[in-house]
Length: 108
Length: 509
Image (cartoon, rainbow over all chains, first blue to last red; front, side, top):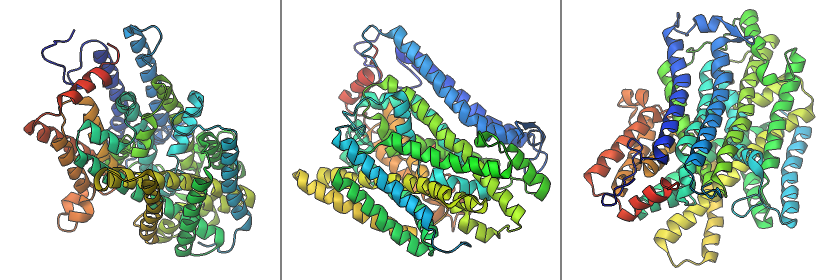
């Protein structure tokens, strides 16, 4: 797979063919979900704000008796981060098993 | 402090808790068990998660976060998000690769990866600075709790607290107390949640899961007293929120004592899953902290004792305990809460002082000044360094520069502007070299302290790079400096590029 005369130089934007390509794809997918849910939501909250304090549709709606935005940021986002980490681990575990030539799992 | 006076029962509970950790640690040692460091018995993924969470919990989580939420409402959720979201970065970008790189500390990693004693020295200096700043916040928390326990002022409290914590570190070290992080986490979580359940019960809210049942209290606060706890941008702009949150995230993924959990793990798959459990255990506390702040506001408003802004800022860092007092909880339960906060601060101080002192004696003295130093000399130096570092921290903590969580945030900004880029490019870009990392880390230090350094004559700098939130622009800027300087100078040694390609990223071939 690799050109022997020109050794590969590690670069996250030009991953090695094989295991690293899939690994980097999983990493970027998780980072996208991480950034959008967190920074993206705060941006939307600002865009839809009707007052300088940020009052708007999200502050009027409620969920589990919380103002919706407060529930989303204070309670759902930490849960979302846990979900992202679980997904990352599941995909990396599968990816590792798929590429493993060693059946004794020494790659762990 | 309004309720001056000696709080005997809480004081006895705090003392008993700290003593019981020593007894438990000695018993564990005499039975030959140790889950600390290399060669420990297998503790499983959940046990590993509890260790990660207890390593993480400090006075900033236990006291500081509740205090800032009390003062700033929704805005302070940036701390909740920053300190949980950072673990995502740590897991996906660093954990596995650091393990495969196989170095033991941040200075070891930087020194070896970039083949440069100068880079090692700079990263050791930065790690020690981070430890000092982080400990300052812990000392403030310890000082406020001791002042409350003994009914004295903050100054006496922090001096007394500093003596006790240094004594505790030394006694634990002399006796060789094994550290049981699972026990520590159990004490922390119980001492944080139990009083909160009692408060929710007394106030008439859903008490079985108080961290998810305080929504009605936010609404009551607004309806009855016109206090809008949840206003999104009342205490800061969108930019300030995002800058703070991002800084805390990259700082989490760059803090030496957090990274060090991944250098030496027997099995990387277990370590990755432990991190998920650790994040869950951390979230259990972070879901709860806002409830303390909301209950504090409610109790104050109902008693008609809303303090002035100044008074509120002075007591914010101990508001978690004040809430329990205002809510009329029994003294033994307040004692449990105070014991949890004291333990969190004590164990953080112990870890940071010991690693800071080890770095001084190993990375700086042994590596640079006297390579022929004996183990005895190094040990003696490290012991002296613990006391010296604690002295420096006490001097700063006598006049604390801000709230606990704010002081901690500066340590995160420094880590995010220096260690994080050094690790990120060190792992993911083979071309990064020693010139790049040295220029980058020095730039990062200047950026972190740009607001106090240049803010007085360049106000824009303080706006773009606030002291607690400088990494939103700082970290990308440092990465840019590292890339440009690396490309303008010769590539790193061929062996290192090969090692990265074949060992760190080629383990499946």
